[in-house]
Length: 424
Image (tube, rainbow, N blue to C red; front, side, top):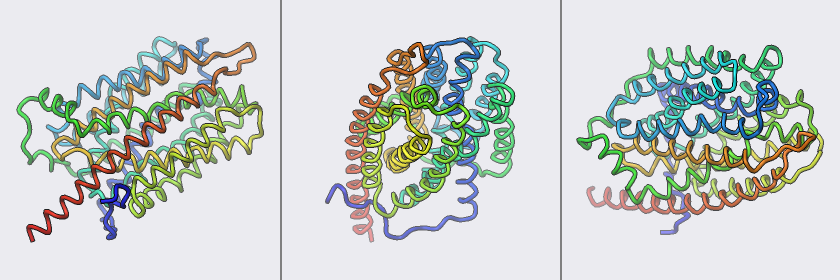
């Protein structure tokens, strides 16, 4: 069978009212999680002078969330398939809200660092539970659209969250965006607790007796290796560039700090529409083909962006928007393909390990970027183009891994089709 054949069914199932509710609440929950991580990046231009810290220390503030999330992901993996996924979601989301509250109260750099660790310990697992729930409740031929809507939370964080967060930080101080996140997270947790049904279908299948055995078998499963390598390669780019992008835009490209909300707003508006379209394209034309398109766009825009000098606001907006088109065209089909890799009894542990690897590689990337980048006397970041070359290399590595996953999923679906025909 041709390895780039579309793996999706020509029949496109429709969403029930409850499925629409689940997608909506999961997307909003992701919005708060993503915003909590993303808000620290544009606040870099405010936080660094306010706390009198260097780019290296700021990179550690970002990576501390990632490292703690990596640890909690591994710790949770052995138990992730042994409980109702709804209860697991509420537990870790409650811890995330606690960490966010601590960020809102942190007056010094050491306390901010500690607060980011607490937030990462819980928030890093939430995303893996969300993906496990999506895979449990939706068949593969619907997951492109589901991931499209859930990942659009990223765009929503840009459209609504980042401009509002930067505005609040400018109006009061850098703590206020975390207060705003908490105000939105509490109602979301109540809606999940009251209206979401338990997710327990995976509990009917046979489980390993030991949680550690369950973890070990998931980690050592050979067919999972391309997904593990792929998620690490996908993550590197975001963590290397995004935390320092606002500083690069202001100090290197010469864009006033007051124009940052406009850049994030326009980019976010573009990706709000792009996300669902990419999801539909993934289900219609094939997830690998969509990922390949996104990779080409990303390679071009990274090369352009990281080599820009002082430029106009409109140029920065266009380049930024096109870059995120490429990023979304990779993220969404990749997540849909990843969801097809594990068995139902290992979805929780698989996604927890994936989240752990994602955060660990992101933490390494962010800390590494903080060491490579240097601010000169004018505040400009030097060696930013080096980051671009590294990101382009990891983009090609992720493309190779996604191809291997696509080929394996295609063969698996073909075997299942033959088996169904044989049994009829």
